[in-house]
Length: 41
Image 1: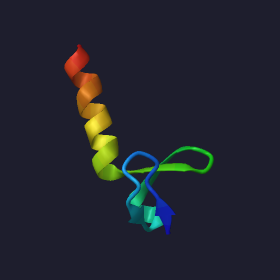
Image 2: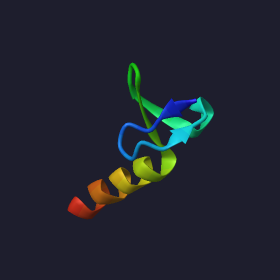
Image 3: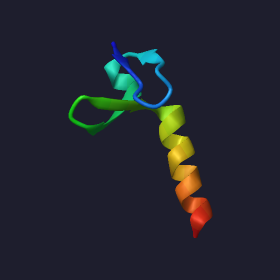
Image 4: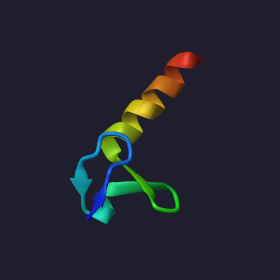
């Protein structure tokens, strides 16, 4: 189990995206970040 760096929710490692060594974000935060990036263009 790891904690999402952004929202703090505990998830199993397979349900998280590794950004940098030791920093994970959950898929919902990952999707929110990607959605915001797309809105810029």
